[in-house]
Image (cartoon, rainbow, N blue to C red; front, side, top):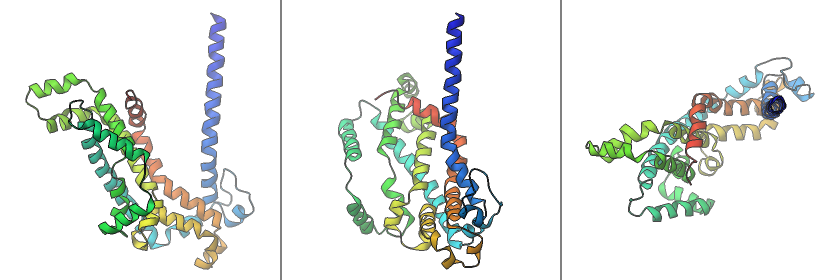
Length: 289
């Protein structure tokens, strides 16, 4: 008995040590970025910065925030993330709920179309032509409309709906409740874990999307945050050309670090509030295939 207890104890210690090491490996690069963003130009260029700021300063963030386009890009990303996530949640729920019912007519055909669209993608040129034909180029809707539903998120939501006890809906139907009343009064309150999960997926996707913004948007005042940061990072080597006075106290590496930190901070602040729903939603939504 003692030998078994000792083995369990050794395993627990090794388990905690292993996952602590993994957590540090994930955290250290981010700490390095934070340290570089708050360090002086000289310290960054000379390679003295590791995981703690050297010659603490805020010059990098003064450089990042000085452009009015930064605030425009930030507002654009907030709009895209909030509006896109809300619309995606509505469309996903209204697609997943009827498809979770075995007696829904045409269910197999529609599911087959969703699976087909997951496996095959039309390509960049067709979607660009499609956005152009809709007149959505150089608008924020160009990075919302094409991604308003994710097949993966829809299947997660559908699987969760299928796992809810059928007796709950049957009793509500006996009491005279219709499909919409059952959905909003019974099903959705029971689906908060999965709703939080796919909501976080959508929010992260909309916030981090820069590739399609780069394809569809060229007007500076319409560019979202990630595209703004991408262009800022790509031009960081020309800091002296953009602002010769500030270039004396700001390094290109520091600008890149500060830009990355600003771009990831909103999602990092959002995740702790949705973490408990996020983990349980992934677990519950993956019970059935």
